[in-house]
Image (tube, rainbow, N blue to C red; front, side, top):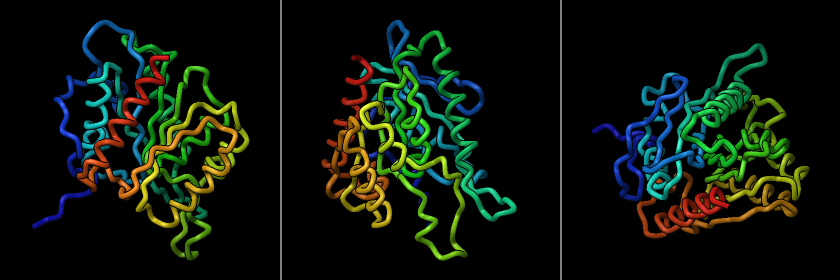
Length: 257
């Protein structure tokens, strides 16, 4: 029996069916709630790096459909973007292409904000896992329309210095969320961090560093004490479901201010 890939595992909360997406720009799906717009929007930003030829892109992952469904049910729009957080070969060796990924997210945000059914002044970025590296840009130079950054079990620094030379992946030094949040201080957007108690030690250490660096930033933490990385598909528990409902409710609240 073939094991189901993690990214195709079901979301841990039963949810209503999503409406048919509005396909935008070839890599962006927008889901709109019932009723007249324009609606505030959450842009769901996947992690990585992932293979470029994964087969099922993040827009098709059950976990992203689950988040989108909960948000739409709560009355806000949700969008899922496929971005290029891939490993690419360069003359200096394998490199995580966060530059292209960040550009894809920026184009997706502008596309969403221009849509007539979206309130372009009320946007939340919700980032997962390795996508957390991209948050450095938004912490360092916050767009006025960005209401909050949600970080779920994020990677917040490059692990490269901690790995043997033959295993290291290079990363543009611009993607340093720990440094970015420290420099932003109180000027940072609202940050909602979902922290899992069974995180991988290296990633957990980066999360601790980020929390320390964010001492002056508007940071909230939602803990999942028994959760592991990707708890939203791996831990089918009441604790997981409670944390997810709390986080979705907080996103809606921040968008409706």
